[in-house]
Each structure stands twice: as C-alpha cells, then as structure tokens.
Amino acid sequence: MKSFEIKENDSNQRLDKFIKKSTPNLPQSLMYKYIRIKRIKVNGKRAEISTILKVGDTVDMYINDEFFIKPETRYDFMGASKKLDIIYEDENIMLLDKKVGLLCHPDDREFVDTLITRIKRYLYDKGEYQPDNENSFTPALVNRIDRNTGGIVIAAKNSESLRILNAQMKQRNLKKEYLCIVHGIMERDSGLLEGYLYKDEKKNKVTVNKRPFDGAKEIRTKYKVIDRDYKNKLSLVEVELLTGRTHQIRAHFASIGHPLLGDGKYGVNKLNKEFGYKKQFLYSYKLTFDLDKDAGMLSYLNGKTFEVDDVWFKREFYNGNL
Image (tube, rainbow, N blue to C red; front, top):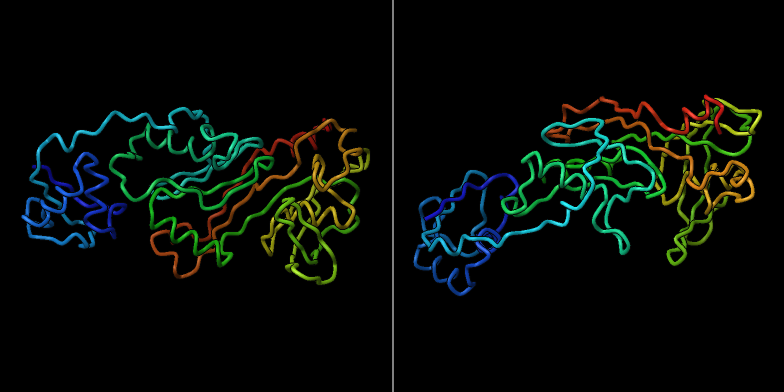
C-alpha cells in the first residue's frame, strides 16, 4: 500500500488522471477495477473515476509494489546550461535577466538549452521541481523576450502564481521599461509616439503608419531621452510601452527615422555596419508590479520595482566604446 497526499500542483484534477501519472505501470483496466473494488480510495472512502482531488486529500492505493516502479528517466532539461542570471527569487516566482542570444522556449533548431530548460534544471537541482511528483504543473514563463533582445523575464513556480500573473499581465498591471540606442540625435527630451501597426504573419514583420489602415492596431510608445552622443549621432532612450504589439519599439522608432542600432530587420544595414554590431540595442531593463486587488497571494509584490543594473550597451555608451 502507498499513500499520496495531494499538494497544490496536483489538485483540481480527476482521480484517474492522477493515478495514470503517479503509477504509469498500472494498466488502465486494472485501475478501473481497483477503484471499483475499493483498492484505491480517497480519504479512506470509496471514490469515483471522476472524483476531483483537492489540496489535503489522501489517495491510498492497495496495489502491488511493481506498479509503483518507474523507469529511470533522463530529463531533456538536464542538458541545459546551469548559467542563470537571477534578479529575484521567492517561493512563488523568479525574475531572470535573459541575455541576448538565449531563447525563452525551445524551437525547431534549439530545444535543449533555453531559458525555461535552464530554470527547470536549476529548480530540479534545488529539489523544488520534481517532474515525477509534480503531476499537473511545471515551471512556466509569464512573459517572453525575443532571442535577439535581452531583459527581465518572469517565471512562475506554481499554478496559482501563473494564473495571477497572467491575469495581471492582461490588465497591464506589470509595467515594463526598456533601454535602447537609436540612430540619430532625437530633438525632444521626451514624448509620446502614436501610430498604427500591421503584422504580416508570413514574413513576421510589421508595418507602422501614422493613420489607421485595414488590419492595423493602434500603438502608443512613450519615451524619454537619457543622453545623446553627438560624435556618433546616437541617442540613449528609455521607453515604456503603453500598448504591447509585436516589434513595437523597433518598428515605431524606425518609422520616425530613428531605427535601433544593430536592428537588421527595421534598421539601416549601412549605418549598423559602421559600428560593427549584429545584435540590436534593446533591453527590457526595469519591471514594476502595479497589482490590483485580485493579486491574492502575490500582493506582497505590489509596488516593488526590479532593475537590471548593468545593461551592456549603456556601459559601452558612457565609456565611449561604441
């Protein structure tokens, strides 16, 4: 006999689904029989296949030990690098500084060493993530950043944190600020850019116009010039997205004649080659939690701001090494 206590990440699922995950060697026909003849019980009582498990429930299985033996598993995430730049961590969330060049999630070319697989390996090594026991949840990213952009990415360690943060993100209660370097000397110290953006799904490229047009969505981009490099004709700019569209910052600044330094898609290759950089100068460097009353267990984060202290191109900008 073996007993399982239902934890947070195993709750709110059917009994049969839990059994399949916790005893993979048990044939389905036997599972149904054992439930029927009360060799599998919930809280000491007979249960149904469709019984929904809750936190604190106990599932008792009076079955042979051979069904509990799991084959040795080699997890793909164990092949990921151990390198992680952690800005903040508690029992519910992690804030990571994702570097340029690292994918957030696997794609058709890279499926082992990504930000999410590094997080899984890190938490597995700490004993906080046990794939064989966590039957309904694995660590997940709340937001993502393109491979060629760096910045703060949020990871949820449990299902409730993920649910709350997804809802807060949808309500735009997570304020993200960016740093970028653009070509040209921006005349105004600050301003609000407004326009309309259309995404071509096939080309994965967007178009920005000042006036509405078919299929386009409104975009609003707030900016403040931090400093200007008159010698190289560059501007260091802080940006806040008031709308969050694909490639919004890159395309919006390009549309007003100030493309990002190093941006090969929306920028000017001739200008970029003069500096010799192949990666774009854009970083999601600051995150502020402006949570509402529905933040629940994460309300302790409300009002807190986290920042990447050492943005590589900011340092290069002030050192005159661009």
